[in-house]
Image (cartoon, rainbow, N blue to C red; front, side, top):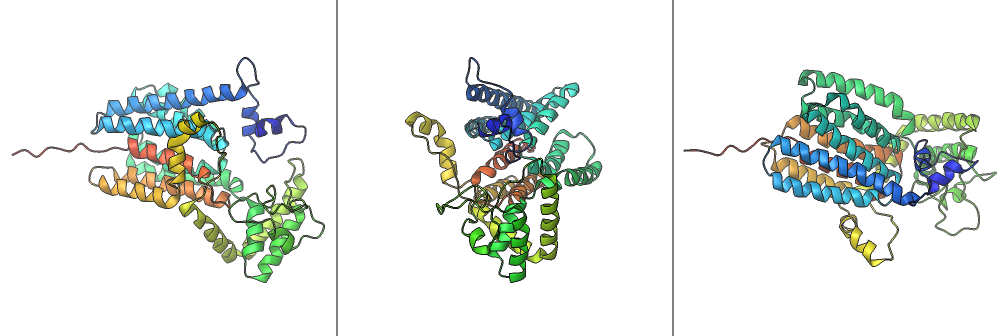
Amino acid sequence: INARENFDSPNRNDFWGGFAPFFYSLIPSTLLSTDTTYALIYLLLIGSGSWGINAFLQNENSNNQLLKSYLLLFLTLITSLFSLQFSRDGTMLAFVWSSIGLFLFFHSKGFRVLLLFPVTLYVIGIAFRPWFGIITIPLSIFIIRKLRLISSISISKVFLSLLLLLLMILAPAILDRASVASALACLSAKSSTVDSAIATLSIISNEANLTKATLCSFFYPQSWASVVFYNVTKSQSQNPIRMIEPSDEELYSSFLKKWLSLVAMNPAQYLQTKIMLSSQLLLAGDSRVDEDQFHKKLLLSPLTILRDLRLFSVLPFLTLILLSTWFWRKSISKVEASAIFIFYLFGVASVAISFIGDNQRYLIPISIVTGLLTLVQSRAKRVPITS
């Protein structure tokens, strides 16, 4: 709703990204409400992806088919519940889930001409959270190895080509500059770094004379947006930092130049602050609207339980992935297992670089897709010992 209203507003901003407001404005309220229509689209995407994945697994004729079917059903349920909470993360997950399932299915059936369709779905999905684009590299390696699209010798060349391409495209999009500068101003023990960060933020400040006391009274490390939107102290004054309007290119260029200078002159402070704040993701917190109606609470209970147990946090989820890899170590492809591990690490790194916050919501899509890749990775059949 907020993204749609932003798109229809004469005073748009880039807070919701470039693509999301346009997408959420495509379908007006007609016979069905807008939310109902988008919910049906998400369920169609997830359903088609799960259908393609299930058909692919059946064609593989590997061990533990029944167990894999149950695990796929559970992942489909969690994916659906998360997507139906209507966020850009959920929308991205629905598109990516469908793209992976349909790609695997079309390739296994020899429908090569149709492979462009799931690739298009993937690009649309990543457009909702462009900083996640870096995960395309290990995901491509996994798909290439899984489907044997090219020889293993050429994988390194594809990897390097994708890496260079994605870094050139996505590097400007994966940095949350205002929150980084705020963290340096409020958390750094080096006075020169604090002064430089305050001077950088003064360019986009609502205050005529921004001070550390004013800025840090709004800053808290659990949210990247505290200095711009949130007011947890219930202060009567406005937030110290403002959004840059899309039309104000001169102000953006000035702030970007100053920000790059801040990071270049304080690399150790920047890295130290990022590591400290990113450590929150090890046992991430959560933020979500509590449902008042009992039937909604009941329907959401599988996802709610996982979130309450913090299983989408980096530490418990990574432990599960490593245990799974160790258990199947004698039968899985090392290349596929490595690609899955790197896929997850790239996703976590994207969240750590792009945001300052401890919200599990940003980790859920990458965790679910990692679980899906773990489910479909190749496993050799156990050969019975005969006398």
